[in-house]
Image (tube, rainbow, N blue to C red):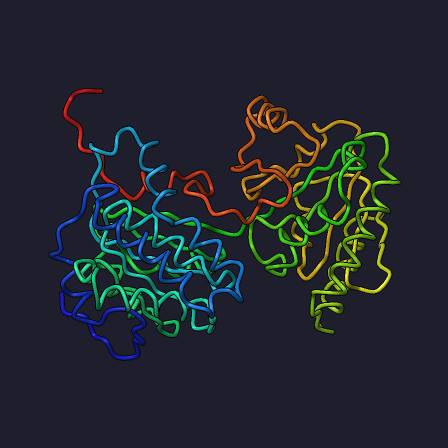
Length: 399
């Protein structure tokens, strides 16, 4: 199929690359080509002094270093039975700059030709990573040129349909509305789709265990989980649940340490304060027994006396949290809907949360991680084993 490149802005590759992808052979899962390219990309990113200004880029570069990839490869015992599906079309989100590269990594390791549409919103991180990619593709890793194309285009149903029509797997990162719009573009009969929709997350803190922790370190961990992305990441906690016998003391210590850090590092816009207050008012009209706790708008807490499935409909960003004190962790069950993605814990046994999920047949909760690690780069996301999901399994009767 001939691709119309009008209104496309190519960061890596060109229209010819896309056209050739339709005939480019898929690679084996964890091919030497892909692993070598990504390992070299790690080195190239670290070598670029601009990357040192962005923690998310350096984290990504560390994640794809050669030793890390080889370790992941060894854990995939069925890799010799898997091959890429063909062309993987990724629609990256506009709220997490490095996400496009994370999605790209799984796709290349799966063995796919990887076509990525990045957001129109300009991020320095995107430019830094794409510069490093172009350096490698125009040099020692030119063999990967047919397998990678990164572009921008304004919202266009026509372009999305063109690119969707040639793909074997479509990966959509975005809100529910974005997914609904993109799904208007039809896929080939054998193509599959992975979607990463609107989700919410929460943190559970055992107050007794917290009192034995370093308050400043815990505040920094929680800041990384929340304010670093303005709570726009699906994995960012919006609800804090307290357990244990030292709740009042722990709350005072925790929020005080966080507030100090936020004032030092976070640039809050006036509109954010207004939006947070508006969300609280809407919540107040729905629930009668709530309490607003806020000294200066940097940290705003809506203390609720009970949890319900629709509580997260009144969420906001920029430091707006629901807060609840539980006598037993089973009380969180009402908010563990299909929209619930990550539970971060401090002083809580992760297996206890997992048992709650399984015993209650909970439809949500895909990740249970320590506080401070909700933004960690992983090959398992939203319940998908990312690399496996982007491959075909070639069955020979040995299973």
